[in-house]
Image (tube, rainbow, N blue to C red; front, side, top):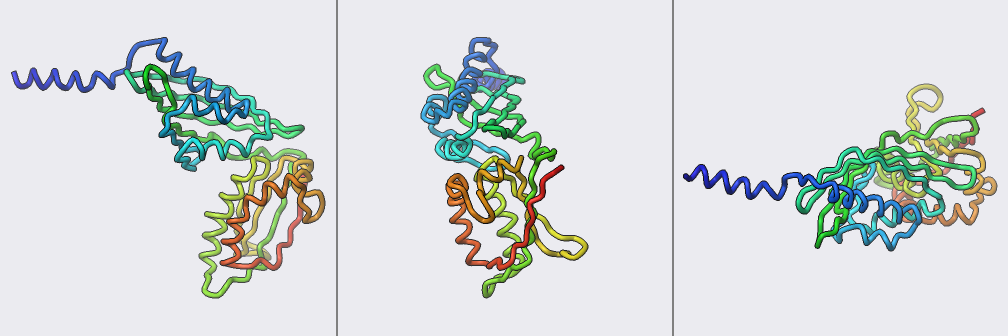
Length: 266
């Protein structure tokens, strides 16, 4: 008798987590995700709240966003682009009050003559509140983080061979700052520039540090710098957001010599 009662209890406890075979519930859960990205594609950031729980959080490309406001702040960096979003639902399982959906997410960001393509696989956890599905969490895994090197791409190759350490600062601290703070912060500024850190292995610049600035075209480069060392209004707006990280850099080192050349792929 005890075993029979235990079996009944286990069935009752687990029943709330068993998938519910409801095409309508699947459709409404998926409609929440579609609505979220429809609003995002229109840059209607205020409407995103209608599709998310108050505890919304996310992990995208290894970066954690602890609230919808953090997500919106990141999304606003792409506000100048016209996104073309393609969602393909791989699998959606629904329970009585929770659902999980796996989605292939392809997007092309278009601005004037430049564009950036992004392919990801995403997992969504949804909660049903008073009969309505809301996104509570998602994790996005980038299938590729590499920009395509092609004719017309611009590579700005910089050598950091004029580094002067502040008193008490070590080379290890500088490397940790550059690789783990400066580069990630820079790459969050805009989708139009990608910074790639370098370390010299052989030759004249063995053991030196460097950076590659990767841009899609000379036109994109000119949209940030109108001339040698002169920022455009757009460039000022973007790079002003890097000011906190530059203040942290000033406490560690000065870079008195930064020889560079902008190379175009022919």
